[in-house]
Each structure stands twice: as structure tokens, then as C-alpha cells.
Amino acid sequence: MDPDISAALQQSAGGPFITRHPTALLTFCSHKGLNEMMNQLTMIAFFMALFIGKALALDDTSTEIERLKAENALLKQRVQQLEMAVGEIRQMLGKSEAVTRAVPPAPAPLYPKPSVQLYGQVEMDTTYDTNQINWSDPSQAPSGIATIVNDEDFNLSAAPSRIGMRVQGPAVGSAELSGKLETDFFSGAGGPNSPHLRLRHAFMKMDWLQKRFGILIGQTYDVIAPLQTDSINWPLENWTGDVGYRRPQIQVSQWFQTGRRSRLLFQGAFCRSIGPIYNPKTSTEDLDAGLPTIQGRMAFEWPLGGTQTNGMGLWGHWGQEKFRQSPNESAVDLKSWSIGMDANLFLTPQLRLMTELWKGAFVNAFQGDLPVLTVNQGRLLGVQSTGGWATLTMGPWNGLRFNIGGGFDDPLNQDLNKGDRSLTATYFGNFFYDPNASLEIGLELSHWQTRYIDKTEGDDFRLQNCFIYKF
Image 1: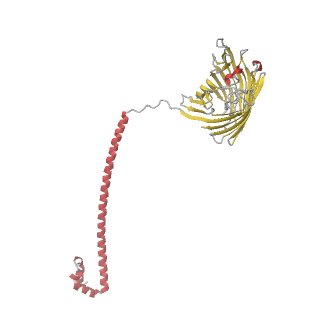
Image 2: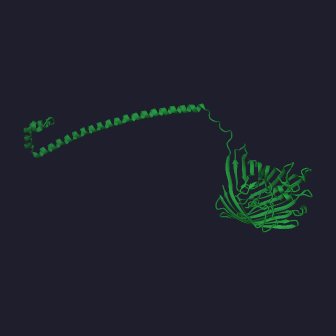
Image 3: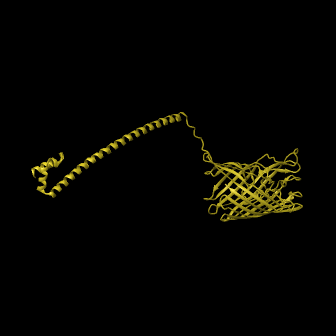
């Protein structure tokens, strides 16, 4: 290369090329030509752009580093603030724990609490009677039909409404503990629109399932005559064939498994003797007993597919009540007794037969006859009676079930006086519709008959319906 051109190129970075070496530039242009000169200028421009880009890049990197340093400082400041806040929280928690440790915790209960289930029903009943009856309450079955005819009667009552609670646990050793408390409004006290409460059930129960033994203490149903008619009337068959009621008692049960779902059951109870005995001479209701009434039942139960269970039982009771002709006279002990049987048979899964038959004397305390029939005032003896009832239940089909049945209570005529009732009987048919588990609607037609000794008989047709909301 020409020495002048080479010197020019080497010194181009230090100052203007043209002003420093004009002769070299002209010589270069004339020596290499215009095209070669343009190529050289292009190379110079490329290297200058590369150097400028690197400089700019170094400048951007420096800016980014400064920005990151600022963010790092800000984060360090926030971490320091969070550490200070956590320290304050730890100090507060430490003070709270110190206070908590200073107050000893309440001691745990020695025994677990029982579980309680509230239940009940709201019920409204209506009745229409063609003739006069002894009780006009629409929810109670007539205890007898008077001889007055064409004395129609219509009534409404909410007295069947009830409320109760079931209690379960805690266990006592190997015994399962349970109880029940239930009331309704059939006390007989109060007005038609403000009836008073009546105690139905109030008992505790202990069951040793492994030993198949149980004890019940309190008030509940009798051991005898355990079945009940599926009827709107309460109680439909009492005084017309169905004995048994509720009373305070101490009841024991022992059962023996004879199969996977069959068993032999023995029950016994010591019960309070309950009258009353109405004495027309003193116009008082007398009750006195020196001994409890004893009840017993033996039954065999066996399955019929599903959850249905058949059963048949034999039962009876014995007790006594004191009767006085007047308050100043000595008491006479009158024996009360009964023997009977019950059967609960599912002929098919949707056809059920229930029946009870009995014979006894002085059974007014078990709703077997009326107080005025209990004692023959002249002969001072308890009136003997024979009775029973049966019901055939069909269904349910889509919440609909039907019942037909009847019952009778037939006192021994030779124990009666003139004007006493010699027969009470009823026949009925009904249906119930349950659209769901809470609502039930029923309609019932029944015919009631009362026969007397040397007196005109009485008859009544009763039409009755109910609306029941269960919870």
C-alpha cells in the first residue's frame, strides 16, 4: 500500500482525515479507484457502528444494574419490617400463652352426655255422631251409647297432639341406657280449646344385649295386651274389647334366641294398681291397694322376610283393690285378674292380622269395662267380662293403607244389675294416606252399640277424619 494512504488510515481516529492528509486521499482515489474507496468506507462505517453499539450496550447494562440495586435495597427494607412485625406477634403470643397457663383448664366431664331426639305430632280430628255418646271428645272412642236418639253432634279437637323426646346413652358398664318422655293433651282437665297436659311415657331402660336381659323403670304400656288398633279414635277398642293401658311399673325382660331372627320372650312387671272405682253411694272415686299388680307375658316371635316380624303371646295379670260402701265402713278386697292371648301375623307382606282375646274380672283399671260395671254393689264382687278385638290391615300401596275390624266387651250378665250395660261393641273401617313421612290424612267410619239389662239399647254411627303432621 502507498505509505501516505497507510499513514492516513492509521491516523483517521485521531482527527479529520481530509484535513490531515488531502494529498493521500487524492492519491488513494486515483490509485485504487472510486469503487475500492467506497468499499473501504463501508468497512470503516461497520466498525464504527459496532463500537458505538457496544458502548450503548455497556451503558444499558449499567442502568439495569443500578435499577436492580435499588429494588434489592427496597426488598431488604421490607424484610426487615416483616421481621419486626413477626417479633411483635411472637411477643403477643407469648403473653397469651402465659395467661392461658396461669388459668387451669376446666376438668373434662366424668361421663359423656346422652343424645336427645325431640319428636311429636300436631293433630286435628273432626267427628260427626248421629246419636248421643258418653264422651263427646272427637278423639276418644265412646265408652257407651246413651238411649237418646237423633242427638247429632259435631266436634273438632287438637287434643291428640303430642310431644316427646328419646334419650340414648351413656352406657352403664355393658348395659345400654335409654329413656323416653312423652305427653299429650288428654288429661280431661281444661277446656275444649285449652286442654291440660297428660303424661304418657316417662321411663328409663337398661338392656344387657349380650345377656339378652333388660329392665324398665317408669311409666309406659302394660305388659299384657301389647297390640293396638290402627285407628283414628283413641282408644277405639278400649271398653269394647281391648284391655291394657299405661301405668308406673318396674318391668323385666329376658329373651332367648331360637334362630337368627326368632326368639322366645318372657316379661314381668310390678305395677301400681290404678282405678278409679266409682261408688255411686258416696259419689266418690275410691282406690286403695296394699299390693302392686303383677303382670306377665310369654311370647314367640319369628320373621317373615324383610323386616316384618310375626308374634304370638300368652299373658295375664293379678291384683286387688279395696272397696268401701261408705267412708266409715271396712274395706273389702276385690280381686282383679285376666288371662289372654295376642297374635300379630303377617299373612303376606301387605296383609296383616292383629287380634287379642281375654277373660277376666274387675278389669276397669285396664280399660276392660266401665267403672260403673266394675263392682256389683249389692253382691260386692268384681264383674267378670270376656272380650276381644281383631283388625285386618291391607297395604301400604304408595302411602295408602286400609283397615277393617271390630271388638266387643261382654260382661257376665249374672254379675249385673238392672240398667247395667250388658254389651259394648264396635265395627269400623278406615284408610290412611301418607304422602310423605311427615304428613298423614285419615278417614274412618264406625258403628257403636251398647246393650243394657232391661233398658233400650243405644247405637251410633261416627264419621271421623284426621290431619297429622309428624316431626
